[in-house]
Image 1 (cartoon, helix red, strand yellow):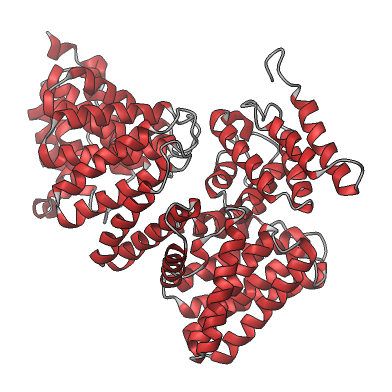
Image 2 (cartoon, helix red, strand yellow):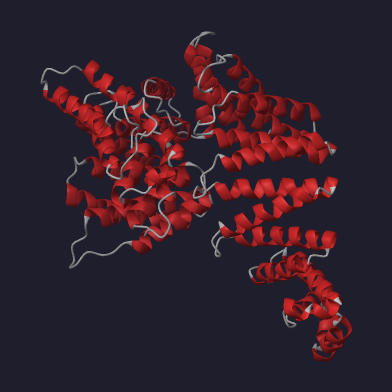
Length: 629
């Protein structure tokens, strides 16, 4: 709720919506007045004070789109995204509203905010099929392939068929989104036969959706583009030029209809134009038509310019080579000192880093660093994107250090990362991203040089990242794990008992924050067990030993037999059990019992020895009195 004396948020929302409605009707309200009312909303950090606010956001954004005030809707959504970071409980709005709001963010390129809305819901809430399908699309665009596939499969399983034979719009929409994600991932993984089967299945869902909604419905047009893009990828893989051209024709028709219905600058229209530009470029290459290639390049440049006005260009809609080509051309065409030059330098640097990751070509990485330095140099000190560009440069320098071992690259990465953190206010939505990158560089410095000062600073950075991340945020446990690792390294380096105590508390928090069936749960268990054994070795604390045995048993139980870390976890459990047996005075008798009961084949398999020892009776702290006397 707003502070006393501040603006009435309900009134502010109503003023903005009423002004937009009147401007749309031509009722004596100008677009400039609408912009002013939205600016009032964006002055308050407690914008999201009630669950119903999600409906206000969706409705107001749609009104702004109809008025052509795309830049105003962008500013509003950026402010809302910042409010979600500052006020995580605001995410706990109605599931349907939250889902639609996530779609709105994703359409406009705000992928982190969309992901936060889809994954940061209240604990215990039900994942609907629509939410899972949208999450799959967002995760794929963020290149989180594993989570995209998981969400897509779960979305298809979560669809509740309608009564009777009629399929609903929601049911078909989920199938279209989820199947398209699975087809694209299969194609990326080289599973072309599987991808083609999924495309055939996708075609059936799209045809039924179009019959249900009509060919000019925006959702039908989006589905047709999704199918045509999948057909295009299939035809490109098969080298079938006629199918490539046919897919391009469908996308061009859908782009024309989408622009006519929603407007040429609507985010959906721009997304389709981006896809159309990519397909036209590829078709020109396949057909070997220089004239068509020139036209495709002109279409790309026009689409970039139009999307740039809305800060909505998604370079990943093109392949890496096309993206690099387009961004190099843009940088060459923009004079030094122009504010858009830094934007295109940043995009070029990102694409070059992606090429290095995909190919291992060091020339791409070296160029990315030079481009990153130029982007930073072209960004004023007080620019809102300066910290992000510094962090991108730091990441490239860290990659160079890992690839070449060049210490100068690491020194520069640390200085650049420190500048990025210093340039970021505490309430910035990506503060933790910058802190994480800086902390990684500091820990790399410690690992290379043993510099304790670098480790001390890494711990402070890790604490700041944990403090800046809400407990229910998906990245909270990641920051806990990094901090725990640094604290255990500090204990190993200095013997600082307080660092070990803090490491144990941090690792306990990481275990508690990770679901039992999450693949990282066993990793956090193992780290906690190591820290507890270190405490026992240092102090002889019986409680620490008992907890270590319990934790190590859980880690072993959660580790598959063929996992490469199973031997190490069994070794830790074996050490803990032998320490308990020695402490209780029962080592000799227990070992004799073990020797009598094990099978002969165990002599040839040390893992089986450790596993049998792990099945001995658990320690009972109440029996420790004999050893204490």
